[in-house]
Amino acid sequence: MILSITLPRLRQGAATTLLSMVACAAMAAEPTPAAMAAEPTPAAMAAEPTPAKTTVADPLEKYNRKVYAFNAALDKAVVKPLAQGYVAVIPRPIRIGVGNLVGHLAYPNTILNNLLQGKLAEGGRDVLRFTLNSVVGIGGLLDPATQLGLLKNDEDFGQTLGKWGVPSGPYLMLPLMGTSTLRDAPTLWVDSRTDLRVYLNDEETRRTLIALRILDTRVGIFPADVALGQAFDGYAFVRDAYLQRREYKVRDGNVPAQEEEPLDDPAISP
Image (tube, rainbow, N blue to C red; front, side, top):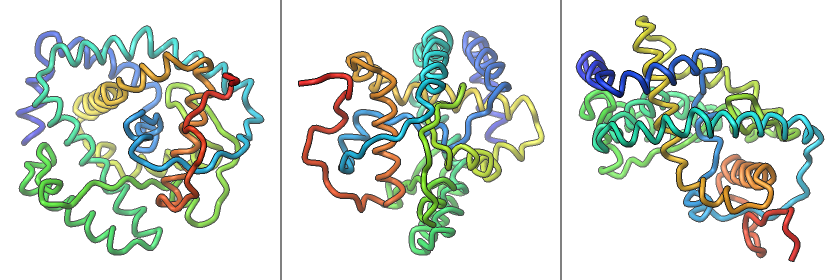
């Protein structure tokens, strides 16, 4: 019922053009919760301790750089302009509700992986958070759970494999979907099966939610554009930031503190 009221309004006027264009792109490769969280933001990196630097194993660098260039060109030509239009057209309160909704639909993935990692207390709180936002939060449009101290966690099957001792393997840049590793890339399909969107019978609604998730995520990483634009080597900057943040998340923050300046661009020598 909530979708039947909210989504038609979002599809009116200029919003129709934005959503339809993004939905067409989404049909080629539907992002998963893990993929949408792949790009680290400066704020996120600053808020979390950076693990000690290690030599980056990047045997697929030649291939990865080509995919990175393709993704960057697509973002510059299509995704970023659409996200900017989304911000210009859709009022902020509605965008907040959209972000809450798409995140809520994907949250069973976090619940499952917390339980698979043996984090029963966290998993229990996640169940309570999901239930509260489903009932009191009008199907996830609102987030009363956060206001009550039930903060949002972020887990996926790649992190679960890392917790079980599976090494990450080489860094891997995926077309359209972005940063990953050889271990994490196949788990994207597993993560997508716990996203409630895939079980919606209405194809138009499902595609609209895909488009909204892409736009909401791209808007969320606007702050990273500044840091990326200042990097001498954008590819190396994104790779190192992703791998460091990924290690931090797999180890639940139990990593040695880094003494050097975090996120140095390896192409810049002092």
